[in-house]
Length: 126
Image 1 (tube, one colour):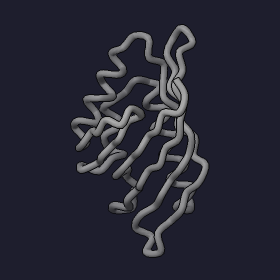
Image 2 (cartoon, helix red, strand yellow):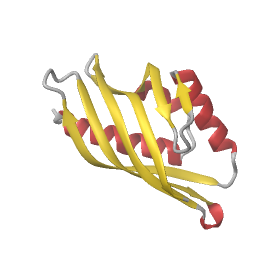
Image 3 (cartoon, one colour):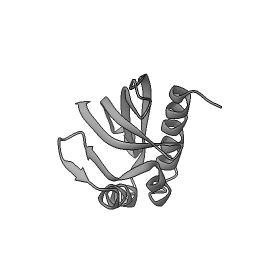
């Protein structure tokens, strides 16, 4: 059985692949119903339906390629029920447009699965 850190890192890689495939619907099972995302410009997206709709809208942009989030650290809460992930992200569009920054995510364990419950993205370049 993988460690909690390995499980979270694997989930991040999987969600990166789903974003690259422009498959918004398959992102849903990896988030809590009450997920909150603060995107790079500071806008707030609340709830899994709104997050999935935002991804679907992004995927409708024919120039959008992908967002890649690269995990740097994972820390597990003492009770093993929550975890913190930090890292760097890059967004790419055709024509060479890129945006970059840092992120932090809160994960929650639910029935043996790690689900995203909060994400904060800060755009530093682009």
